Length: 193
Image 1 (cartoon, rainbow, N blue to C red):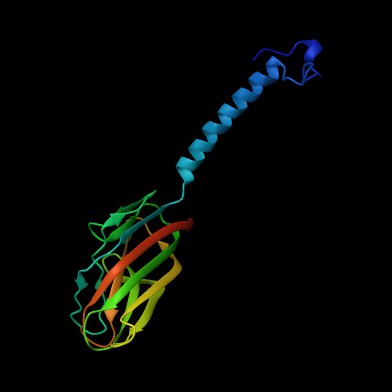
Image 2: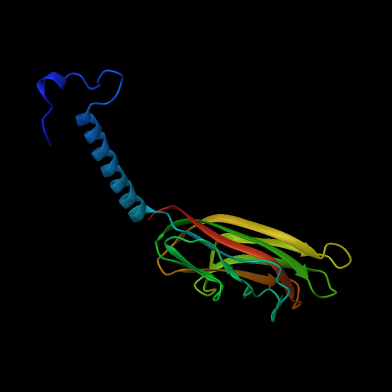
């Protein structure tokens, strides 16, 4: 870069408050360099997030065994994602970057049968192989009373690359089916391992 002339070495501004040409050039290159560095840092360190959702579902989730969770397979939409794969066709989110994740599951569930029962929602990983921490919640639906309930569960879990995150439901009292009308399963990376 050209060296500043002696007359301008101690004067950064010209008359009228305008930057001198040398300082203007320096600021231009510093902003360009900062933008380049910030873009690369965001690309390298960008946090992972993603989700799947269902709205207005009318298909029942079949329960075969009391107290045994079955995967909720009614998701119809992928949300925005970064460094993970939101996959509503397989009803899961695949982790691409290991780390600590905030996981949220919200579901609106309707009782199909005439008998009262309690449903429990779970977040599991790797096709139901493992519960994800204490991410579970339950709600009692009563015949002739509250036949639709909503549960929201949230927590932080450490996940590995290629883990899949799924939503599961169980009938704790019998084998009556439920209709999960609306559901959102979302993840957001909050830390790295």
